Image 1 (cartoon, rainbow, N blue to C red):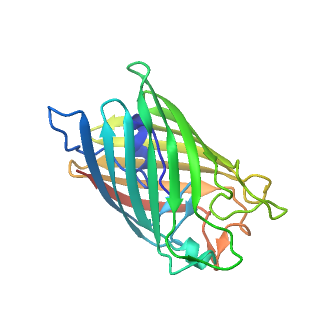
Image 2: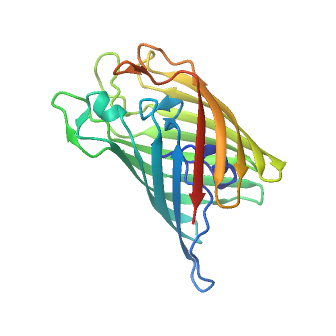
Length: 254
């Protein structure tokens, strides 16, 4: 599930966000195209493993205009959709997104847009559709960012309300930041809250603390992540997917 941070905090989200990339941009054109490739020991999104505690390979591309408009495509292998009984023959997540970002001042930035998380495969009869669409908006100050994401699809990642109804209106709050230690090193911090509409057991808080190193040809990061999520709600096919873990990842852009 593609996660968006504002440009100043993109490196913090190296476990999921397309990193700062070298855009293919001509001095004569306001357009740019950037690519990313990465690998992680566990694909964790909002504190929850998407790969049933297994590694992932990820990549994406983004087309942007100097005006601030952008569109992009991002993908990763996943396991929860099939193991959770939502779709047959699924092992992939594809995120399609677009938005507008820029700066109010030199220190203050903004980002707003829409994203669809799509999981190819045949939906299992009687299962809730895991495909999800969210709108998001965020602001940043220097290396600190805050973002709000709001589900506009019928369900958020297959979750239902306690009465079996829709979970449209679920939201996620994301407060993230980085601190530059010099020589390519940075400290990373994050806290978030996932509200599943009318489902208290599935709602939770997550947090992350880590360090990253810019190697010149890519960024490597090591992070500790944990949640207070219900073990019963977040045990899928026998795997606890929202407990504490340490994640090693590498991403590069071009």
